[in-house]
Length: 63
Image (cartoon, rainbow, N blue to C red; front, side):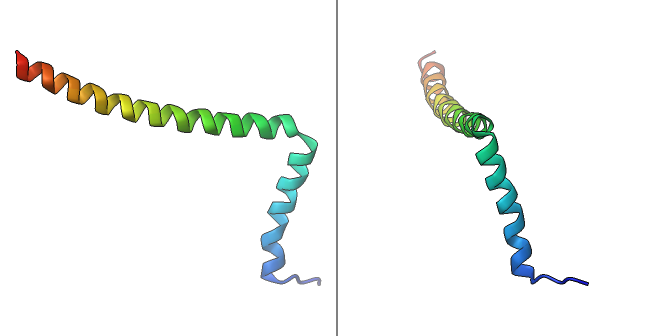
């Protein structure tokens, strides 16, 4: 039977991904956009939590 080296097997999924990227650029764009939006949302959420936490603790100290 035909045997391929393990390193050759590692490149196979990458080739499939490249073919998908070439065939469906809009799908790739949507995936990247979704990833960026999720990342930015996470950063904004974390920053807002920190800001609110310090603001609330100040309010508690005042009252």
